[in-house]
Length: 318
Image (cartoon, rainbow, N blue to C red):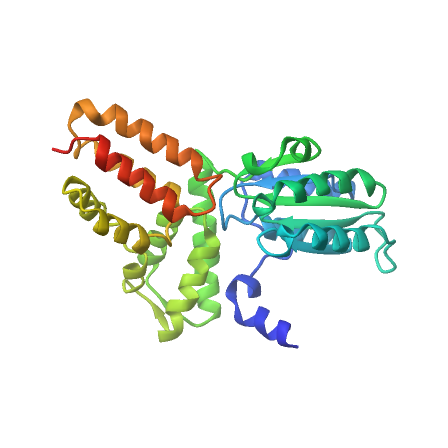
C-alpha cells in the first residue's frame, strides 16, 4: 500500500508512460521498440543516453507490453555488490515463470555504468548462462563505462536526440507537461515551461520533479527560474582571473546540481571573450581532457575543480 501511495504522489511515477507508443521518442528509436513488440521478443539491450531522457521508462514499458516477468537491479545501489547481483540475478533467471506466457524473463540493470567491472564480468557470464530463459536490458548514461565483452553481447540503442528531432521532441514534452499541470490543476506560465525545457533538454525527469516541487504554491511562474537560474559564469571568470581559489571552489559546490558536461560547455563558450588569444588553445585542451574524464571519475566536484584550477594556473586572462 505504501508503494502505491508513493508512486501516486511522485509525478515521475504517476505519469510514467505505460506503453512504447506513449513514450516521447524520435520516430526511428520508437520504431525499433515497436518492432520488438511485433516480434514478441526482446534481445539483450544496452540503452545509452543522457540522464532523464526515458531509458528506464522505455525498458519497463517494453517489458510490460510483452508481458514478461521483470526484475530490476539498480547499478548505483545493490548493483555495486558482486554477491548481491550474483545471488539475486541467479535466483530470478534460473527459474521458470509460472505467470507469464513469454519464454524469456527480463532483468533490467538500471544505471549499469555505475556497476563495478567485476559485476559487469559476472553479468556477461550470466547472459550466456541463462540465455535460454532470460534477457538483460542495461541502461547507462556513459556507454564507454560498460566493458567491451558486455557491450558486444547487446544490441545498442542510442537515445541521443539531434538535429530536427530535438525541436519535435521538445514540443512533444512541452505538450505532455502542460497536460500534466492541467490534470494537477496547477496555474501555468507556458513561456516559463518552454524556458525550463530548453534549458534542461532532454532531462525530462529533472524538469518534472522541479515543477512538482515548485507547484506546492498552486502555480508555475518565473519564480521557478531562480532555482534553474543561469550558471553565473561571469562570477567564475572574475575569480579565475584573480586566482581566488576559495571562491572558485565555492562556485563548483554551488553549481554541482547542474550536469558537469553542461557546466564545462558554458565555461568553454565564455573563454573567447575572457582569455588572451594565445592561451585559448591551452584552455580548449584542458576542458576537453576533463570533459572526457566526466565519464570515469568518482567525484565530479573534484574533477570540475581540477579543470578550473588548471585553467586558472595555465591561462592568461584579459
